[in-house]
Amino acid sequence: MQSITDDFAKNAEKLAETVKGNTKVTVPSDKKGEFIYHLIENGGYPASRAQAETIFRVSKNTKSISAVLFACHAITNATPKFIIYDSFNGDSLLEKELPFPAIGVIEGDIIKQNKSERRIAMDINQDKIQAIVQQVLSEMNQSAAPKASAPKAAGPIPKTSRAAMLTKLENYEIKEFPIPELGDDDILVKVEGCGVCGTDAHEFKRDPFGLIPVVLGHEGTGEIVKMGKNVKKDSAGKPLAVGDKVVTCMIFKDNPDITMFDLNKQNVGGADVYGLLPDDDIHLNGWFADYIVVRGGSTVFNVSDLDLDSRILIEPCAVLIHAVERAKTTGILRFNSRVVVQGCGPIGLICIAILRTMGIENIVAVDGEDKRLDFAKEMGATGTVNFKNHKGVEELAKGVENAFGGYLADFAFQCTGSPIAHANIYKFIRNGGGLCELGFFINGGDATINPHFDICSKEITTVGSWVYTLRDYATTFDFLKRAKGIGLPIGKLITHKFPLSEINEAHKTNLAMSGLKIAIINE
Ligand SMILES: NC(=O)c1ccc[n+]([C@@H]2O[C@H](COP(=O)([O-])OP(=O)(O)OC[C@H]3O[C@@H](n4cnc5c(N)ncnc54)[C@H](O)[C@@H]3O)[C@@H](O)[C@H]2O)c1
Ligand SMILES: [Zn+2]
Image 1 (cartoon, rainbow, N blue to C red):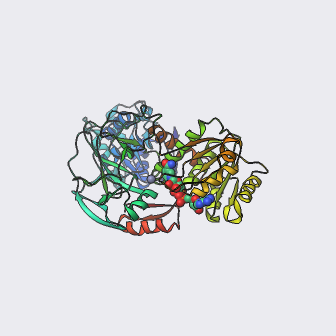
Image 2 (image 1 turned 90 degrees about the vertical axis):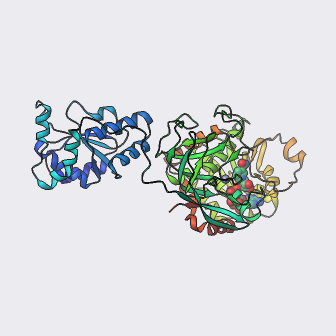
Image 3 (image 1 turned 45 degrees about the vertical axis):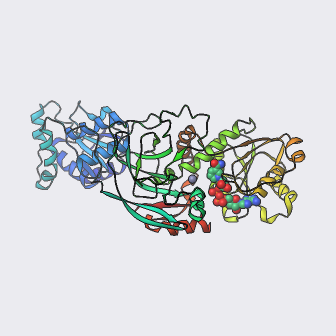
């Protein structure tokens, strides 16, 4: 408990800056109004007892900080940095552990007075302060709490939503579609951002899946603004509420009962995902839009505790979580393994970050671009090899060996779509080592290897890895927090951000390969 005795302006400012969780403050009764006033000046909202109770109930029901803040917003019509309420000594909401910044102001010197006297003690002696705190006092007199039903969306939901529709090769058009009525199992999400993926680039250039006209964007995230009445939890069992930030994984139209557990060991190749669906009469099927309609039977995850950049990177990171899980099945990957990661695009760089967060310290990155190799070091690589500086694969393998201080790799991750790179990588691996091949999401052609030298006589254990499971998604959320925790600059993978209106430019930048991850960030 903090005790504030004088200099209220300074103390309120200090408190407003530092308050993270719940704080009880003792203020002499005749100074309470003044103190609350200064707190308001510093971004606090003077919630009545009833309002605070409502917010507490939402927090208890949803256990979601963003839902609570959302409720706070819905009730207060503002976005306060924290709420302030009169906690009355011994009867404090703070004891109920509100999961967001809250300051309960109690009066230390009038404990023995009865309730009405306490209320009188809150009367303010300065006009200005009185006006501001008036609301708190008047609402404290109302016995009925405001409705504690699910918080409503902030601001009205528009009737239509923009969506970037690929109408012909290399041409998106921004179209306006009506936002439909939601079914009982559906969720309406306001899109905040979405990464541009290699698959989008293929669609943009060639439409290999024959989807045109299509709303693309599958690496998206946003905020729930409306939910059908049956929606209560995400696919991992976490409560869902309006205001929560979410990502989607795949859609199981044919078998909506598939659970995380069922898919523990099964990868999701072939399942539908938003952003790669044929167009229908709803149209809002991809994340390159202002809103997306997440239909019942889709997997959806509450990721309110991750920042926007991390949320945009979830999908590509899940690819690597899966690859590392596959690699672990060989039994070769250990803490002290020497690991080579070939290819330092987003996929290889995330691979390095994951190995690093696992505690693997001896990582050599191979690529042809010095800029990418420098970034590999930022992500945790201990050594780098530019293949362009080596003539022939024998010399290149020597380069890798030297980078490990005279040893070949125990394990290798192949993160390019180049058949030559696939053929080369066996030469980097020691006898009895392992390889995870994940670079060929699409068919990139045949590779020539020598079965005797490369696999048989060396006894190499090889695994392939393709997309991810639902479990990998959940692991990814933790990885992103850990990576941030150990200071890896994951967010820097997003090198370019474009508004939705510039989606054609975003794709052209992606094709030019001048950056790493390109993202659409909604205005
Ligand atoms: N397994 C999966 O589920 C999955 C999912 C997504 C992407 N992928 C695949 O992963 C690959 C990498 O994706 P990305 O987004 O990082 O691509 P990217 O094109 O940005 O990166 C590839 C990197 O490999 C480097 N490279 C090319 N030839 C090389 C060689 N011979 N030796 C060493 N480095 C070489 C390039 O310089 C580039 O930096 C792609 O081919 C993609 O299809 C697989
Ligand atoms: Zn993708």
